[in-house]
Length: 213
Ligand code: ADP
Ligand code: NI
Image (cartoon, rainbow, N blue to C red; front, side, top):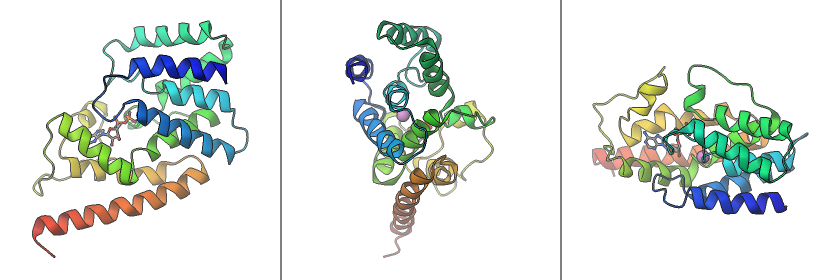
């Protein structure tokens, strides 16, 4: 798809310098997962799914300072590539409402295409890749790896969520919750497998920490 090839180029330039686990390889994995989920889900529109997958982190407030300007830039880019205004609206609505942090205190209803991209993004936060990304993210921000005295938090709003505790707490505060939050049945199946691997990892980690062989 020509539109998607053009978008890929734009997004790779936007995320070229990321060192928090939101680099272009994350985007490619999300796009591939989203495609796979689309193939097994009724009523998916692959153009919308792939467009939202490629763009979903370009407007993220963790990664850009002025999200309003960035959203306007993305909209112009899509116009330039001949997307219709209803396609642009669906993509923008999906990518601005899909993040975990945006849904902490309010559950946004996404279209089926938005739900697929949300599932794909969440799948890339769990399993072996998810473990690596959490460690990488925590290292980037200088977070403590683990502290048994610090209890995982619950019922956080976005600003509390953004104040990190420890990397291991992040598994309890977000990653272990993701399988239950999957929208599509195909993603739920993949999430259960990845989640089991993460639970095994955290169990081993804590055993080794306590010196249990
Ligand atoms: P969203 O963009 O959906 O709100 P996040 O910002 O929570 O998602 O997370 C994006 C990625 O960064 C995920 O892989 C996640 O595990 C990782 N991450 C976010 N917060 C932390 C944290 N406090 N410690 C470790 N990893 C984190
Ligand atoms: Ni993402």
